[in-house]
Figure (cartoon, helix red, strand yellow):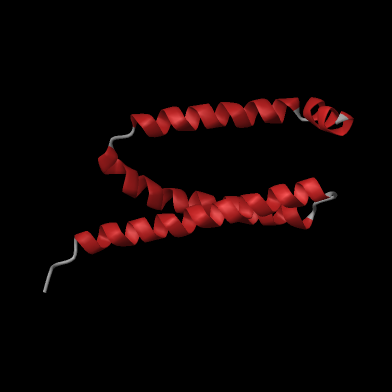
Length: 100
């Protein structure tokens, strides 16, 4: 338990930044009209590709099990988001094709 408190106190600024990013992200997404969600998702796929590469680097340089687990979770969730974004974008593009 002491190790957890030490980790939190050592990384307090980073934790504040992550919580702030979550709140700002939720507020921004709520303000976007539903018509723009799909084009924004396809644009976000490139950003999540960078996140996946960064999380792979974190996993490779992990010094303990906690960092490895966080890196794996980041890779997994980032990959899910990229694949889901491509699936939704593909569906959207199918709607604009001419029917035979």
